[in-house]
Length: 421
Image 1 (tube, rainbow, N blue to C red):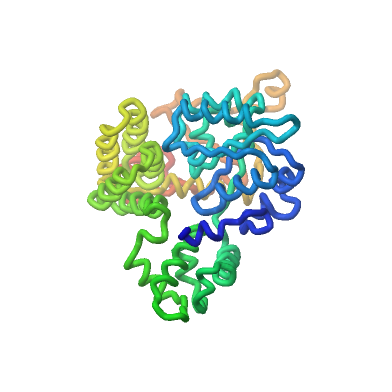
Image 2 (image 1 turned 60 degrees about the vertical axis):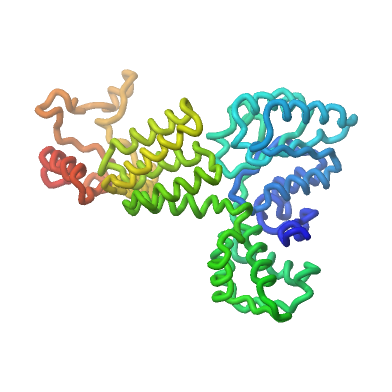
């Protein structure tokens, strides 16, 4: 028997739950579908938000041939074979056959290059699904030929609507009397993922021997503790494990960090995905407490692309342990967020005249650049000057944190600026 998530997969736009900004009344994607023609597109969003379902609905509504490829199992040969099939199934004045590629971010450059001509000349309409930012993973020529649409996690109302639909319409679930007494744990463990929600409901219902099932926070938590893999497709727990990995690095626990790295390596996680998270962690969590961390993380990312797998796991391990064992600071992260909030509150404040560029005679006459002091002409290559807009000249944004590197930086700034830092 099919899993509940498959049995409940929507067949039409009206059955589709969530993503109202794309498929709600008068939304852009719905208008395209109802017009009878769509352009190539990439659906970007986390698991369980309807990317595959939406692609199938589009093909069904447009009544056109639908081909699928998985980026994990397909190479250039398979891509070319599908394109040849699409050419032969094309009829005059009909929407181009749709080629749906799941996890398109895992396609390498040569695989993506093989798609270009067919997408450009209209042999196929490409629909790609990805959990990763396509700006990083999809080659520019292919990306420029596709519209990118962001799908978001389902909100509380969407998930509750889906739960009620499952309980009230699924033939298997209707064999029992199901009461949704509490929803907090159900929603929390689902994390905006429709598939997780349905897997949890199915797990709880099938685990209860009685004809009446009361879904409560305690029962949901207990069932998932007994069977933690049940609520994640294929047991990958992709986002949960990367979260544990990053939090272990942030918490300065190399043992835990290397364990979660091993879980990802053993589970077939994309090494570049891990390496990107290490670069982010180096900047966000280690930051100025150890600026070498960012250099090492970036070198890790570069080396992975040169070395490949399986040796790449050693590079990831070295970087993971180094970051976890490094002192931590988020002062730069907090500083840019504070600065952005300041910009939002104060708007486009004028640049002080003495800091402005003066490439023309008129600008010089207007005082642009006048009285600017060239730092290198002074002792220690420093002279006190106002660099912030007038309204903000006394404000403090970056604040040092309690680590050796930032203390040293702050001491130098205090020597230069006296009481400002």
